[in-house]
Length: 207
Image: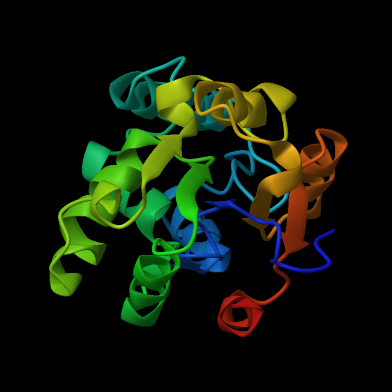
């Protein structure tokens, strides 16, 4: 747990509920609307079926994910139906947070480490960023790492060490901000300074 910012040189941000506002219930309800009553529960805030983990680590493509979901749920869902339900949780990217990160880059090296997938990132790039005049989060952060690109997801230690090793970061001088406690606990075991963001609006108060 971070006590002060004086010795921090690097900040690693989670995306969902830290930078991007989410509403998981919207995706849960969207899947409930399009899936047959007999279909299994495929996604919640705390758990998801393995096919979602495979998508998030890049082990399967978006096309294979959609086919797998259709088979799992015994439902002839269209690609559009699946994508709309899966993206329904992505609410907004506050411009104020983009300005905050841009300001922090003057004093810190900034990173993103997010458990995400190609379907979500395509949606972010197409619909959430353009209204802000941004094409990619690479324009805002120094380095951006998505689980489906690096093949590792939090809270696995390899997700954190990928960034630490690649950029030769000192964990004691690196701050990690995430909304999920299990991800915070994993980072702390590696000596990384942490802040558990329990409310997405609290990000402004930290800095």
